[in-house]
Image 1: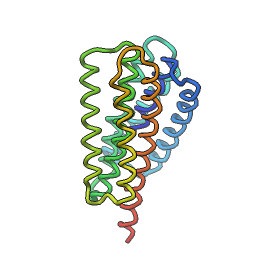
Image 2: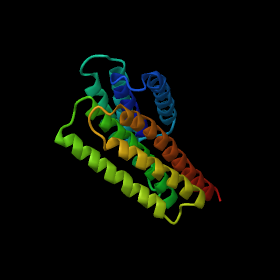
Image 3: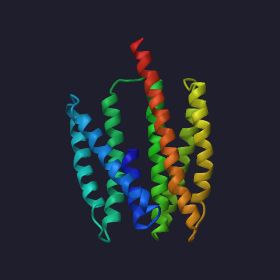
Image 4: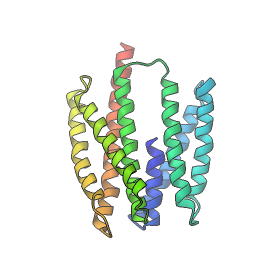
Length: 225
């Protein structure tokens, strides 16, 4: 979910010539990571609805990759729509693969992973506005995504399963969020704010990824015991 939105964000950064020297190799690394993850999932014994959803993820991903290699005027729109579909379909796959898993720690791991996606989506939406899409609908998307991120971050903070170590990581992520959203609030040709959105979204993504992995380890250790 998060990687599809991140790649769309990076694609738009390149079109904006914003930190292109770092965005280009990040795109290549992101594509490789998505391919490896998808290959790993395909090796699992999926069946029924999960198998169909996984096939849909694969098809959409191939379309997304092709769109990212295209420099035409419509490539950005195709990359954006692909990212949205991949986020939704991947989220559906998560639920299907989890099945009857009801562990609250697993849910927190999933929530942190989703927050990574929301941060990347918010940055991508901002990049769209920089490309000239300042419609009312885009403003609504930004505000809705912002509220979801803050609500989820509060839930992670207040969860009884959140350890002191994870709590410190969440505090750091919240500090980055303040800088991130402050930069998004700037309009016009504020190049510094655009660079801040690009860099802080990456930091938040790394933090939420780490938090999600920590929850996952906790849940796995508990299951093993």
